[in-house]
Length: 170
Ligand SMILES: [Zn+2]
Image 1 (cartoon, protein in one colour):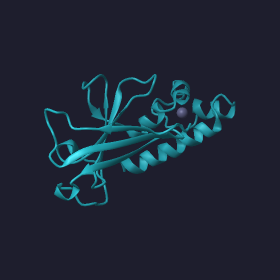
Image 2: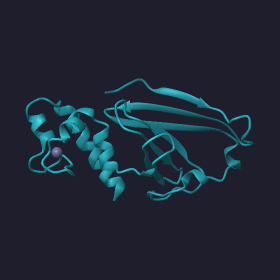
Image 3: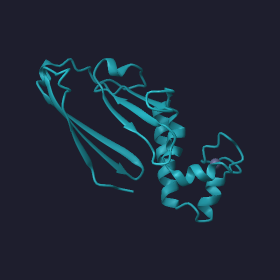
Image 4: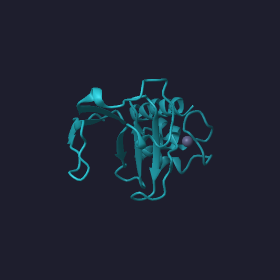
């Protein structure tokens, strides 16, 4: 599914005005099951301490420095996700059971599944509880794809996303 981009212009709260950051424009778009976010910071950028770009790895407490965030919840999912993106390319992903409660590092492989409601629904009939729906025997999701109960295009999107998340998590 591709949807129109949504843009939000973020301004500092009057109680905590930013001296050098005037605004942040955030564009989000859902492209084939992948949430694509672009951020543009407006201000006196040369006065900000921006971390140098490096290889990028999973890291905690990015919010204490310089990072962009997105909070995402599936329409019928439980809880929500928080993603942090640093200009250094470091990143973080958390799952919350409820608003600011039950924070755990997000399992990105599970996140891929949660983004596809039909895959999540069929997965309860997989032979193995931890089925990733890739090559496992007795996978109800792959059976559903064969029987046209799940659109092959959606399953391919899931596989692409799963592989991407696996790469990010390694
Ligand atoms: Zn499966």
